[in-house]
Length: 563
Ligand SMILES: Cc1cc2nc3c(=O)[nH]c(=O)nc-3n(C[C@H](O)[C@H](O)[C@H](O)COP(=O)(O)OP(=O)(O)OC[C@H]3O[C@@H](n4cnc5c(N)ncnc54)[C@H](O)[C@@H]3O)c2cc1C
Image 1 (cartoon, protein in one colour):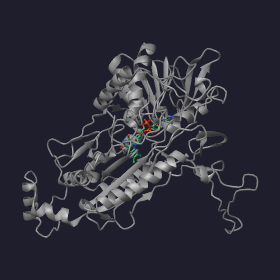
Image 2 (cartoon, rainbow, N blue to C red):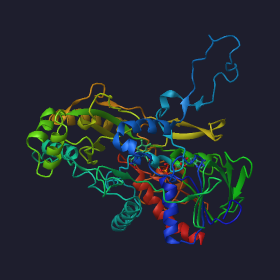
Image 3 (cartoon, protein in one colour):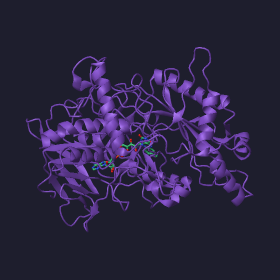
Image 4 (cartoon, rainbow, N blue to C red):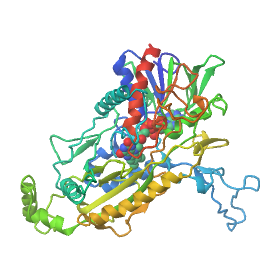
């Protein structure tokens, strides 16, 4: 197989969703030939593998903050108003017609007040799953989950089937941290501090479902999951598996071309960005085309394809959602830490005693590498947001180097935003991004309902702390705070699917959705999309598992068409 002949399926994007399509299609029909391209390079020895599995980060999670920061390219950035007029007279400056510089993602069309300032993309083989936190909750059936069937029973059965398959594929469990002293301290304290009162039920706290495995030989370590598999990389940096799969890194999917008037994609135009000597621009012909280039990259490729003008895909980039985030960090209450030493639980005893014996000067009586807490409080009617109480690396919330990370806990609150038509992601026909694709522009404002829920969420962040003063006190500088819009990195609905049950806005289905319930683009028999952009509903939980479900569902249809 090569660019010019052979593949039955073309996939743009090697993130977890592109990889889900490849894995699922191969499972259904091992003979299918699949060609994938990714605009980013191959920066791990095993293509697409999670970078946090390196021993350096297993030993010190805070060092991973820098890796995440380096992997995130924020998009777009409002232009710099600061024009260096005061520089030497012979220094370069923007001229009066263009007014401002536009390189380095600066976008003159982006108004700061409508921006999702922290929204970012990751360009490398494996996409964001090379650094993600691996939290894999299901969306709540009543409060978040989209409808795949009008009939309740069929809808529920389909979601059970899809979630079961997705969890198996990425390997999700809930007990990888249950033996940990730190985990038990946090979970037990929260359950005790939030009991049922009167008619109000107890607040639900449980282990966060995570895509990882604890190492059976050395249980101090975990393997964080990705969808990278053992693939061979040849001398031209092409990743191969048998004769059925090829992945071309550093290869931009530029646009798809249709057969005029036929409702069918004819070929996809790709550009190899690094190996300039051969085939810099290539046309790839396949039977089915899947665009899974992330919630920004996917509509960007469509917007760059000549058919995707307003009249053909009116809903493209409309109704976008992004979660509101509140965050704080606490240091565990000293009585809790003292209790570990004085009254260790039966299954902690040996670890605690060994540690005291080996490190008599350590004020904390638990092993240095005791795993972190991984707790969640799922969305509920009373608390319509998703909460994670854990200790993990993000691009923010870096603990001061002097603080013992065994006593620090992060509280993250993720709020829903409803999809409304006026929240949009558009692509410029004048400005290009650093990869020569149309520059994205956000027009995003929280709705009154989202504002209300965010306010309640912040009050809850304070309340959780007040009620749970038995858990700890704020880390100075990490008191409850809203984070910059976009920082959740859960941008969604940009290429959304039709939901099986109204209420829908009035009019043509194409006005409020881009793909049907099987992720197939309307009016195109062989074009499918994947990623968080497909989810059509407001949600607070982490979306990747649900986006995998959509890819799994679509794969059945695609495998049939690609035969
Ligand atoms: C710090 C962090 C923590 C996270 N934690 C969680 C979590 O706990 N749970 C969760 O559910 N989600 C989490 N996420 C989000 C999660 O990683 C994303 O939801 C997921 O990766 C989306 O998968 P995707 O394949 O659709 O997109 P991506 O992972 O973004 O992959 C898209 C791929 O497409 C490629 N691409 C883009 N444009 C083109 C083009 N024109 N041509 C070819 N290729 C292109 C990119 O290089 C990239 O490799 C986290 C993300 C980060 C960064």
